Length: 170
Image (tube, rainbow, N blue to C red; front, side, top):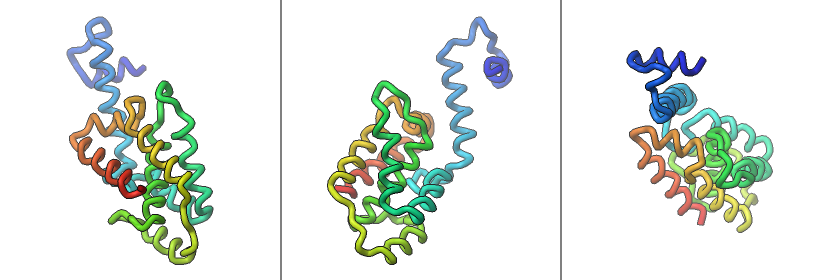
């Protein structure tokens, strides 16, 4: 099915001549096209997964942050990290940075309100360390979100945003 669909996108390709490389590139182009429907900005709150996490955080607090980091930290460099888990973790880490006094420019109003209602909430060094490790894993080669951004013209800007986040949690 996929091969037939990919061939329809490239009229000169047939099953015998189309290399795996071309199939992979076309496949990534499709993934970016369809995944970006839920991504409107390269910032860490600029996607559906992050905004879903905001709601989870306002309901559950720090426990939501820890739960968002688990899927990223439980994958090894040999297993594939899916984009939704990475985007959720990046949103969680933005909240860690905010609780350390280094909020992003695009912090959702719901997070600001939650922090005002819960001013005693702090993050310990363990959460910061987990956040640092999650960022390293997200920027790794075996990370879908990294691959998707790498295929876009905005890859360097996205990496800069993630590295800036890493600096803000220290």
